[in-house]
Length: 190
Length: 76
Image 1 (cartoon, each protein chain N blue to C red):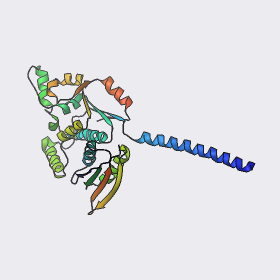
Image 2: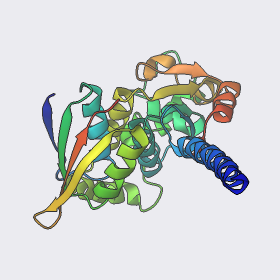
Image 3: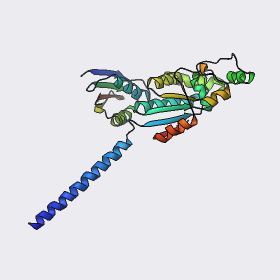
Image 4: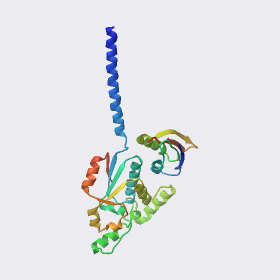
């Protein structure tokens, strides 16, 4: 009789240990999921191909339930331009405005640009394969609620006015990006 | 319980997943979505997406050589 009681006690303890182990494993599994998590992407590049990567990834993350914050700094601010304005700018700013791409579609490839021939070839391959162009990837990102923000000093450096940017872009600083990064499970610089 | 269809044939990664996510936004819980795609990455992508988002992947079949058909149910 005493043997039986001891066996039952042992089984009870083992069962409790198993339950605790399963609960801990379930908690670990939920940590692996992305839903409800956030991602911080610092876009530094103004290359067509690198921007394609940035927006493609942002769209995929957003589709996976992640809150995506894209912060455009330095050359990356070009991706948020819709047009170039020259009125009221100093001559140095006018020069920069002329040299930089006028909108996201005008950005260059990082490899094989060949004065535009390489980019034209790539775009024709993309069209054949039904791959959306960069401007469509940007629109998709806005539709998926990807947060777009710009670095003000970068705008000042290149003499870009807020009026030249697309709508829905907020002004954020380095501290905001870094705090977002700290809260995020994914932080990239593209 | 509505059944919706999404044709993602001809779309490259990640567009099929993006389209599925957008479609799901307008669906009610319990609605079914049938998706067809021919991108080779679609099968692992949709399995990962459904698992991550807590949605049900009721079935996934390969028909006509390279067209993958996935049936999803909105759980949340």
